[in-house]
Image 1 (cartoon, rainbow, N blue to C red):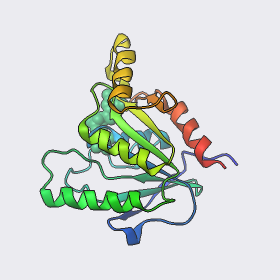
Image 2: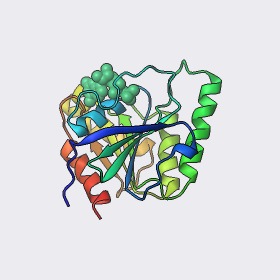
Image 3: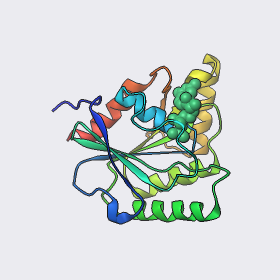
Length: 197
Ligand code: GDP
């Protein structure tokens, strides 16, 4: 049955495992550095301006936000990372929550690792991507803000992202722009493929 991706709503936040959603519906987990445009990507996929909060206050980084999509799957918005001004306590809380999330099997149907198309992935991006790899779940990498690149920069930048994240040939890297909607069809296709079964 077709999924209406525009029918998305916020369900709840989880700051500890007791609040994780475990109801057998597929979950698409989005991860990315603060400011990479994770909220914008989720909004773009949903055809909404403010479903996920764009530019949400850094510092409120230690909760997972769940969005229901057409009652058929969830977008699981993992807390952003890499924000310099986050306290050590907060960083540790983030690490604990991610460990708890990734160590529980069956939570992730598809991982979506978002990186900045303009730059080489950071050490944190590599770590996050390794978590997806270790979980054994299928994942795609989204290179967001591709609209900020000149045409001739796109291919070399995508290659560099592949290299730094040690992606295999078969791993999918999707050039994307939450600003223009470029790549939206491809990402929705990947989500549909993994969740409509
Ligand atoms: P988050 O912290 O990862 O959720 O990032 P946000 O969604 O809040 O986006 C951070 C900033 O990047 C905002 O100013 C967005 O408008 C901007 N942004 C996000 N995606 C894109 C994109 O694809 N292209 C451009 N040019 N700007 C973007």
